[in-house]
Length: 384
Image (tube, rainbow, N blue to C red; front, side, top):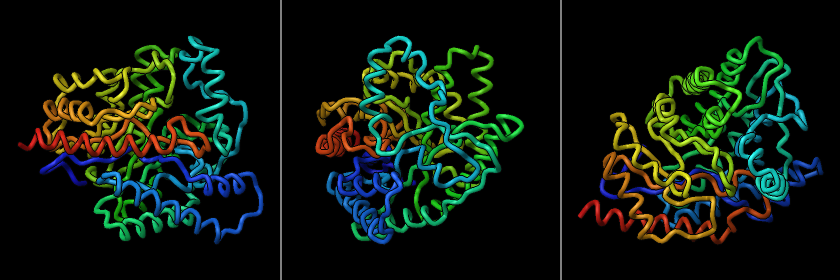
C-alpha cells in the first residue's frame, strides 16, 4: 500500500454513478430479461474503463472500478454465495432509532432514494443451507476489467471494495450466530484472496459494525460482545492476507438525513483498530462527524497504519472548497503524521445501482477534482 511520502495521496471509497446506458442493461438483466451476455460484458468493461479514465483525470491516485457490475455494495454478494434465499419484507432492524425519531422523513427517503430507488430490490437474504463461494467467474471478469483499465491509463495502484462478513443476510441454518459468521467469513475469503492475488488492494466495506452501536435492544455488555464478534469474524475472513494490502471502511449507511443516532467514531475506535488492516477509512467530512478529528489527540494510530479520512462528503451536493479540504487534511496530518494520511471521501457516491443518485453525476466529479486540488494545497503546506 502506497503512503504519502512526499505529498498527500488521494483515493475514494469505491462506488461511483453508473452510466445510464449500463444501468439499462443491468436492470434488464436483474429483471430476468434476455440479455446478450457478450454485449453485457462489453458494456461493463467499457464503463469500468470510463470510470478509471475519469478518476485519473480528476487527480485520484488510488482508483477503483466504481462497482460498475454490482447492483449494490452488499446485495451483489447474493450472486456469489450459495445457501441463501430472499426474504422480502424481513426487517433487519437497521436505522430503527432514526426511523422512529423521523418517521415521515425516512418513509419518503427510503421510498424514493437510497435502496428504494435502486434498479434491483434489496431484499434481505436468509441462510438456509451450507454457504459456499460460487462467484469465481463474475469476480474474474471484474478483476480483468480493472486490470486492463489500470494498464491502459497508467494507474499505479487500485483497490476493489467487497462486502464485509457482517453485512451478509441472516441465519436459519447454522447452529449459532457465531458459526454462521465464520462460515460467511470462510466463503468471502475466497473473493478477498483472489483480489490480492490479482495485485489489487482489498477494501472491506463494513457499514454494519456501526449498527451495533445504534441497536437500542443491546445493553453495553451485549453491545461490546457483538462488536467484538464482528471484528473477530472480519479478521477471520482476512486471515493470511498482509495487513498493508487491506483497507477497512466504516460508514453509517445513510446518505442524506438527520443522522442524529449514529455513533461517534470515538465510541467504536477501539474495535475498529482491532481489525487487521493497514488503513482505516471513516466519515469525517460531514457536520455529524467532522469534529471527530480530535480523537487522534488521545488515541495513538498504531505504527505502520494509515488513515483514509473522508475530507469530502457524499451526503450533500455542495462542492467543498479546496482550501477547506486542505484544512481538513492538515488537521489529521498534524495529529497522526502527514505520511499516514490519504485523503478520501466519506463513503461511496452510488452504493446502489440507481438512475438518480443523491449527488448528481457531474457534482460527484467536481467533488473528486476538489479533493485532488485540496490535497495539492495541503501538500504544499505540509512539505514546504
